[in-house]
Image 1 (cartoon, helix red, strand yellow):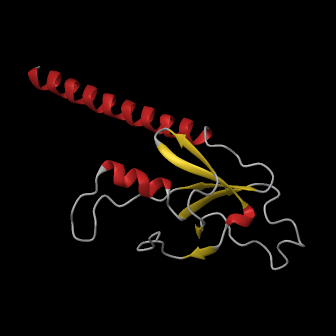
Image 2: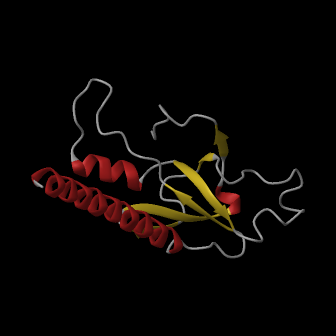
Image 3: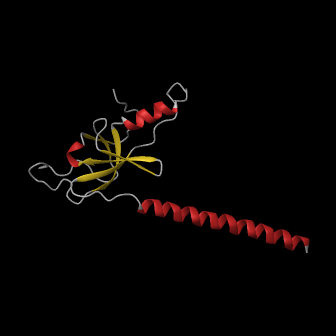
Length: 141
């Protein structure tokens, strides 16, 4: 009987953990629904994760990481607005970037948004200056 009680407690623990996992997945899904859809010629971008340490191994101060995040020149394209790159006279060679690209922009470009503690930007389509395959190692001067 004692063994059956232990199994019941174990099963209860598994059920609680499964319930927590479901709640976490629902929370992630709800957060994703809160991300804005860019309108017009705008592009919705995320800021890539700022490195926690310098190349030497020294941990960066929180204020340093915050400044790097604000002044970053690298963004990750999440979604293009419906009119982005549609102007043939302005973009005769087609779009400059697509969803999933890492792009280079000027520091402080776009509208800064804080969504659940993560910074995002909404930029204009003509703000993109370059596309990079691997943004690691790219630093603002």
